Image (cartoon, rainbow, N blue to C red; front, top):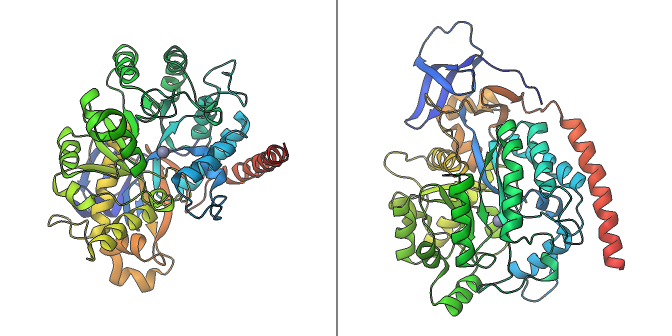
Length: 470
Ligand SMILES: [Zn+2]
């Protein structure tokens, strides 16, 4: 998409890593980064934002295709429905999508994310093969569908082709339902190689993702790290870990170690890594992650929806741990809702209020937003997530539907309203790398994206019916 490029902006009120600042004039460089930034009472020539602005958040974990199945798995089919019975439905669903559907669904999701306070995404992409499990003529076909969705919407993309080879610890053979995900190391190498040029051309960050310790053996993870040194040195690496208690038990039964300990013993986990979920941790594992500098990718609404468990957020933050938020199964596309769920999970466990705050940032919402924006950028491998010189000019305007009622009491607590009191402050403009991608809550390609999505859903519904009948 072509969005108007701004030369800079004047913010009456902006959330920076040092807290709220007033009357900031900010100039953008040609590459979309923030150049000069200074306080200025009389700006001239810059567009003025009278409403508060906050840094855009990178959604650090998404499986875009799951947006189309949100709401379709909320029926009890089993007295003990769980993550694992949900996963069977997801596998069934994943076997229906064409490349055209993938593109339409991802674009629909990315549109929602932009309007939900996100300016970037990390796509953890594991549907690679054709419906029958054979690779497409272009192995990277479905990754290119994701690239096209990012281009059409203007959301910044970090793309992680996923290595997925097994169904459980110890290199267990994959199941028939996983056939679209499965690759060997040579196939993965070829796909990564084919994606390098188109990713560079489009400005996407390309990274790597062993799906989990269930889907990749320790030897394969070692080989993947060699591949990384050779092809994409220093690129982001993400992995699902310790999401479910069954995974912890299977890990202990197979190798005598819990999954996070196991991962740290086989891989050079550092600040370029992102551990997705990391829900079930011992005190020692919390410290190990915090000390390594890795980011934890929390997906609070998906984790609640799937009954995963509660992340030890207060302990992790007390040790200086880094985190970001992900929409994962894409049942929600609003950053504020994820942050609200994260804080509420801690309150319900601890029977306290205002848990994820500290002396430097006593406002929970400002603390969580600032940290999630920085953590998301860190996990995405981009210098952004802060309204500060050298960062990307990616920010979100918060508009009030009742400015006369709310602004007198709520200007500096606008984020508290946005995160915890849904009736105040909505997303207005969204600017990504200096380009105005959403204007006053509207996206210029919205109509076409919604029409393509509706057409994709008709095709998907017909294929689901055929498969149920077959
Ligand atoms: Zn996931």
